[in-house]
Length: 473
Image (cartoon, rainbow, N blue to C red):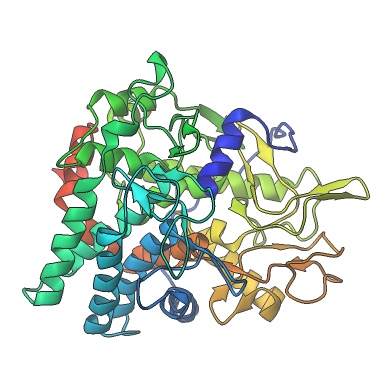
């Protein structure tokens, strides 16, 4: 879903609220403080509840995770990727046993390894090693006419490779997991979908393909969640893209200062978070970041602070925005409508950066949740305040519901009860639950980061992209 919104952003077809940030004196960024016992207790419950989304809603036969719940839904292959890594956290935290996680994982990988792949429009799950964005929860076949998605395949592979690195015992099940992970990753033909939109697009990977119409007329350029995609494409043992790809991609970055934070801009925060779920970018730099004197983790920290500063400034005067109620990213919304001169959206790539501002008063907890490892000193207070202030309107059995809008007090088909005190989503979204759980774990133990440092494909991709320093040396 989110990469479709990236296409719309690139094409300029989003309805946006644009405003120039006022010059202001932003307080110096404090050094992250250690987590208090109260913070740890909060994160214990948040991680346990969020984990249950993946464990309880997935189809146990094929491992497919729904795009959303409780509303009946197709599966999102990206959500499966987040789920696979979540199972590993579940083992480490004692939510499930290693054997339970291995059994769920091997069923999932068996499905993706054997699911039909061809150029046909129906009755298949993918083509050329890539998978369709959404799959039927039961059959595992392409849902309607969705695209063959390069970014959602990459997010799925992030989860698959984490399982490959974690299940390292010489048991039949864990050996099979490692073999299936290698098979699925090696099958992806990155070069097939590269350079499909004219000579200028030669180094770039297309956003996707439809059997009905061909390649999507947009490539992965600019700065966004595709950092993981290009690391995986460079690290492929069978169909790697050339090393010129990364340099070409970084040349398209929009570096700018937004709310006193100089950084590579991308307005929805998820673009600063997804790749960091699996890769620890602290202390490693490519040529571009060596020139800027920072790393990508610091870039994401600055983007988080800028997002919060915009919400604090609140130029459109939305209800409840403040120091601990903030966070703009792609998420659900109340409705596509204009009421009393205010424009609201349903699902939309909300965000704030120099590139554009999309803000209808809707806050997504995953915006702060996915940045916990970058800026815990502002993210954890935000999450704790949201849970306390809004209670079970926002926080339920699977943790935070996807989004809320205190300004919107009109009818909505997707509200968790009455909207008299604002709109609160009825659903949880897999691609937003994943970053909350996994970045909380990276903050607390660096578990996912340290696990992926052992994966040879990730290391190879980073080195070919020109990264050096830190843990790569």
